[in-house]
Amino acid sequence: MIVKQVAVIGLGRFGSSVARTLAQQGHDVLGIDIDEARVNALARVLTQAVTVREVNEDVLLSLGVKECDAAVVGMANLEFSITISQILKDFGIKLVVSKAASELHGRVLQRIGVDRIIFPERDMGIRLAHSLISNSVIDYIELSPDYNIYELASPATFVGQSLAQAQLRATYRINVIAIKRAGNVLISPGADEVIQANDILVVIGHNQDLNRFYQ
Image (cartoon, rainbow, N blue to C red):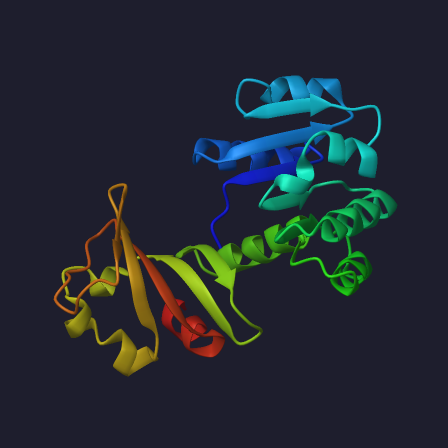
C-alpha cells in the first residue's frame, strides 16, 4: 500500500512525533488537535495543521480526512480514541492506526477493526528492558511472540570477519538482513561483506537464538 496523504488526529508527544516524521519523509500530513499551541508548533512542518473546537465526524469530513490514505489517532482519552477510530473506519480509510493506553483499550480498538494498534509506553518499556539486558542491543522489532528483528552493535569477536566466516546462520541460526554503516544501510549484504568495528547489524531470528547470540 502506498501512503501519500495522512491525517494525524491528536498532536501530543506520540502524534506530533508521527506527524513530524511523516512530513520529513515527504508525505502530505494533516495535523488536527484542539490545543492551539500544539498545532502552532507544527504549522510550518506539516502540509496543514488545524485547531478545532472538538473532533467529530462533521469536522473530520469538512477537513477532508475521508480522502486520506491513512489516519493516525494519537488521542489518549479512551472514549474519544475509540469514537474517532470507529468514524475513520466508517469513512473507509485504508489504514487506521491508533494509540492504546492499555490492553483493554487495545482489545476494543481491535474489535472495531483498527488496522494497527500501538502501545507507546509498553513498547518503550520493552525496548528499555532489552537494552538493559545487553549493551549491544540498540533497537528491536517484534514480528511475533517467537521472532524478532534486532539492531545490534557488531560484536568485537566478529570484527574483521566476513559474514561467511562469522557463520552466524550456521552457529546461531540467525540471518543478517542489513548492516548500518557510517550513515548508510547495506540491504541483504553478501556473504563476503566484512563486519567492521562500528557496524550495526540488523538480524532476524527466533528469540532464543537471538538471546544466545547477543549474550
